[in-house]
Structures are given as structure tokens and as C-alpha cells.
Image 1: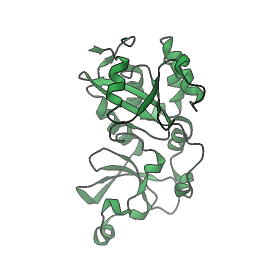
Image 2: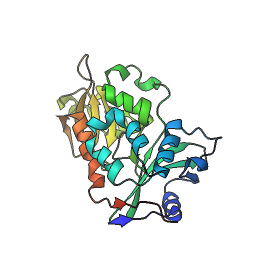
Image 3: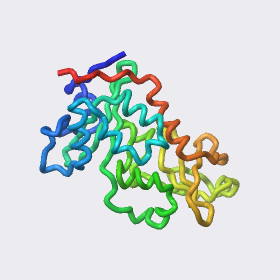
Image 4: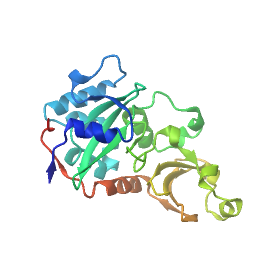
Length: 246
């Protein structure tokens, strides 16, 4: 099924979650006073001409590791939009419909520098994940819940934080040091894909932590689970229209 996306429909839907001040669909719409990354403008220009080469190039660093996401970008996401909110923050939107219902993924501008709270472990984060945050997006998530995608780094948290409510007895029985497990993705239902730095050196490993089984985290292939979990949201996606409706 092909679903055209009307501009007003998108603005109406967005208003339930953010305060959209400006929705920029073409390079001519881009306000020069806003800090819109040049690559985003290139993506808009390319898509205005019916192409997605600029979008492919933008995601190239992680394309081989996220095949389901790349398929979504090419098959289901309609031409990418730039959103400017009232605080002048800009983000790149990836609208799509699933069974006719409108949804959005949102990507924030790439990091300009590594935040202090993760600076010590940054070299041990998988290289391609660092590339994602430094060159693509500082977080790319399902808009309403800020979930189902790599979280903005300011939302990363150690599993030892009080919010996860893991008591000392449970922590002692776990096969990892929760003060060295960093949550970088959540599924919106209380479960997290994490990076485990428990080993004294080397690249952090993937770990799943389930809120219903807090004492039984599972070691996993980080990229395989990241791609698979995100792809759940695309299972019912509709084909995109060749051009947006007026």
C-alpha cells in the first residue's frame, strides 16, 4: 500500500510530541539562521530530485551493520524532513506510515565533542558506533517515546543508576559489574541493549538487560540485536508515495 503524506497531517501529528516551529522539506525552505548540517541540506536537495544517494552516503559508515535500517531508509521512509522547534534545535525526521498510521524517527545533529560523562570509556565503544554518533546522529529514535533506536548520549545511563532499581543482592548475583554496563538503547518497555565494560580492557561487548529478569542479562552481538530490535517497528510499514500530497 502506498500512503501519501500531507504536510498538515505531519504537523498535526508532530504537535502531540514536540513544538514544531518550521518544517523544511526542500533546500529553499532551510532557514540560513538555523544550524542545519550541510549534509542534511544535500539530502533534501537529492530527494527533491527523486534520489536517495545523499542519504545512502550519510548512513554509509554503518550500512553493512544495520541492513534492516538501511532497507527501511530506501523502501519505507518518505523524503526526509528537517524540523526546527521553538528552541531552535533542529532534527532530521524520517516519517513513515504503518497500516496507514503516521510515525516518525528523529535524528539529532552529530556530536561535536564527546561528553565528559562518557569520555573515559569512549575509546572502548565499538568504532562504528562512535562513527554513528560523530558523523550521523547523536541519537536516532522513535519520536514519541525516544526509544527503539540508539539513544542520544545524554540519555545513556549506567545500569547501577537508581532508576533501574537493582538491589545489592541482585547485583552481586549478576555475571557483570552493573557500574560498568552502559544502557544505550531501550525498547520502550523497560528492556535495554547495553555496552558492557566489565572486562578490564578491549572493546565493550553487547548485553541485553530485561526488567522482568534483572538478574539474568544476556550477552549478545551488539549490532545484530540493534538492527533486529529497530526493524520490529518496520514490519507493517507502508510503501512511500512518489511525492508528498499537497
